[in-house]
Image (tube, helix red, strand yellow):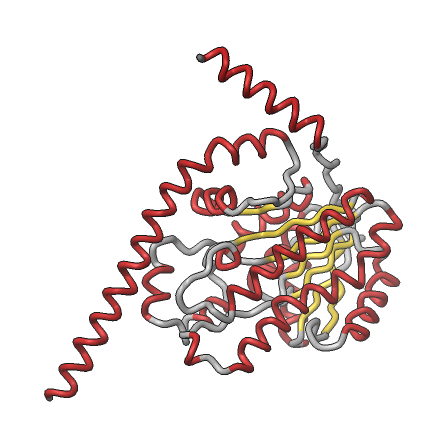
Length: 332
């Protein structure tokens, strides 16, 4: 029986190799590379810019607020490793006008050369119950979180394909892998990035261009602080079941995975489990990665059921607490 199982495993690996050759891409060399980071004036985006700059890249920071951009530029420049490196700042709303985004990308390429890596980090989160959120909130989040990644990517993809080199990073969220209470507006806008990334990767892989989707957990950034202002109790309690990450840690992992051409970038054991559970038809960059997903799927699904049960329990407790509070108010 053991020999039969071993033979089956060997046959499976050979079949996988023959049907879909999984050749790991050549790592992207960052020294001298031009890296564009949208949402680069703060949080994860700024830390990604710093991480790339530490490795010798030329940086274009893109964001809306000029004052924050200039401050971020000064912070990034502290990590220069040679006197040739440049940090360029461009103020633009990447979610409003494609032609404007295309023009500023052209300006950046004229000054620093073709874009070797684009990191789509511009985004925001608004938490609240479905019926409490304004319809405009759904439109705003889909515009910024999804179209705000489509436009810059569309602006660089042709040149990347022509040069046969490039990396495009979409910074999603763990809420883009798992729909959670309070994120009915936010989660869909981040889930959309996964569909875009999978389709785009299939198109550009023959041109040696690789796409990475990053799924960071709650990260200690100004964006999280803003999100917490409207976060329902249920959402806050669910979020507290995992720890908050430092943006530097998240940025380092994203840059590492992007350089390697990995499709999925996750942080910590929870992130690894979620990425394995939700891999579906997502591309992989090695046979080992595919086998790990196959082997761990059953175990991780079992663990996930306990997580889901605990989330449901949190929501029921909050509901009962609210009902008791309302009863007390009526009798008072």
